[in-house]
Image (cartoon, rainbow, N blue to C red):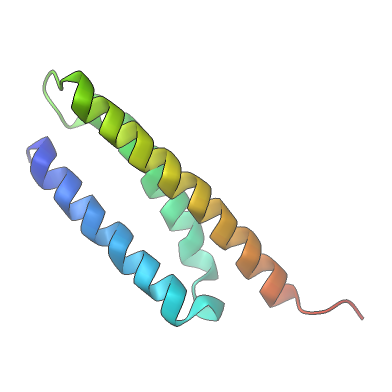
Length: 88
């Protein structure tokens, strides 16, 4: 698939995961790590999926990928603290 279609599909996946994080955060712990994986994939995908992408596409994927990675780690940390419960 072209990089445009790839970015559209991954963007929809990020949006659906974000919707799940806001609607049912207690059930989304495992998927928060998927958001991290999607972030890393977004950073490296221009060179794997695309054919000679321009600088704008590379920067866009790097910024969006870094945001997805960072926010996925924040979600994972928040979910881990919530699942652990208060200390006994």
